[in-house]
Amino acid sequence: MRTDSIAVATEQSTSNLTDIKYILSNHLNTEVANLKALVQLLETEEDGAKRQEAMIFMASITTSLENAVISLNKAAYDSSEL
Amino acid sequence: MQASSKITCIIDDDEIYLFTVKRVLEMHKLSDTVLEFRNGQDAIDFFSKHQHNQKALPDVILLDINMPVMNGWEFIEEFRKLQPVIAKPMNLYVVSSSVNSSDIDKAKSYPNVDDYLVKPISHAQLKEIFHIIPA
Image (cartoon, rainbow over all chains, first blue to last red; front, side, top):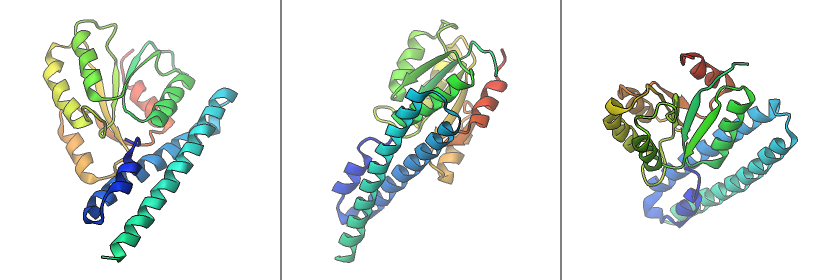
């Protein structure tokens, strides 16, 4: 599940670091798998419209990964303040 | 390329995964029809409704674990109850990005699960899945 998981992680308090790790781990696994699948597809995809669609998905993964990094940074910073 | 009249059922809420798998199935002509459900409950409802209709039922099910409403584990349990009355044998694969050994072991502990595949599924893995389904 990729929808909303980063938003959920960002809202977690530092008392739920285990939850944050679990959510982010799942999310990163999912996005890396999606990225690999898209790269694999693009190696053989000849349909221009489908290539374009795949590129749009890759851009959305970039944004998603950026959000994951923000969440990780926040969790790391908050936990260092405990 | 492999000629086929096979039906695939994908139960997953990830639109990128759905896009890539459907496209690979299409490019390699592995499956004529793809049924897609965003959670386990929608799939169970479909199977219940069409339990006696062989032509509507899939040959292969690709099942995610983490989904809203009804997750993959809950689906497997509900599907086990339905299987005795379903008119068609179906191969069920759990497909997840989780590499957690507890998920893998749990999936393989179900007698009605054919295998656990870690995302992304390669083109070769998909071909293998459809190769072992009788024509």
